[in-house]
Length: 307
Ligand SMILES: Nc1ncnc2c1ncn2[C@@H]1O[C@H](COP(=O)(O)OP(=O)(O)OP(=O)(O)O)[C@@H](O)[C@H]1O
Ligand SMILES: [Mg+2]
Image (cartoon, rainbow, N blue to C red; front, side, top):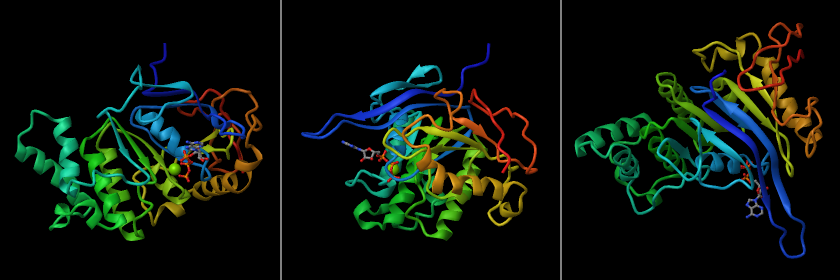
């Protein structure tokens, strides 16, 4: 028997009841996919399709209307220190300094650690995001948006969760800081067996970071329609990756999905010929020709699309 995947997302739907005089809203439905242990998965889709809602359900902070999330064989219900979240609005505890926002989680994670151990560990992650030399003593209201986002990243990384859930974690950062923290994220992730699920709007960022990119159709009735395998070898480097074979095939595939297919496939099972709920695995062909079926992680129906 195949081992169970680390994370199983099975038939998730999110529906909102009808407001007075209106119709009920199904944001997404039939969302099913697996994530293997140690995998780095990005999800892309247009605004409002339900990405943050899915991430919050994975975190145990929101409830699905239907379906289940199983992590390590146990159904997710409620938050856990095994899942670290960087929220889209980088919500921090406003009455605590940046440092205490980080130590708070570390102390919860390691109740047996001394004060010094907690501080040393927390500072390691604050340094990683470039927030030391006094900035760590400021409260969130005294920090810029980008600095708050960096505190939020340090806080999530410092608890070294099994699953990192990142909701556009680099959105508020300037290009230089974003590059540095992307590199740190990859360094932290590749030296661990952590699994990452990350929302981004940036296709280049997704290709740089991910093993696999999930593509969501537009809502309402949004679905995860495709799972695009990024088979570009690691370590990857921002400047070099664009010269890698397959880079532009993958990029064009993503851009084409966002521009055209996300709308065309919206609200139906179009493009999912098996009629199953799982995303179709796509591997934009490296050689531009062959159409051999390929094995992709966590999917049942597999296609190779030569573009
Ligand atoms: N209480 C609510 N009642 C009705 N609809 C809601 C409610 N809360 C959220 N929604 C809808 O759920 C949808 C999904 O929201 P979500 O924040 O998950 O989208 P998203 O994909 O993360 O978008 P973005 O890229 O803009 O962050 C939106 O269309 C939103 O209008
Ligand atoms: Mg969102």
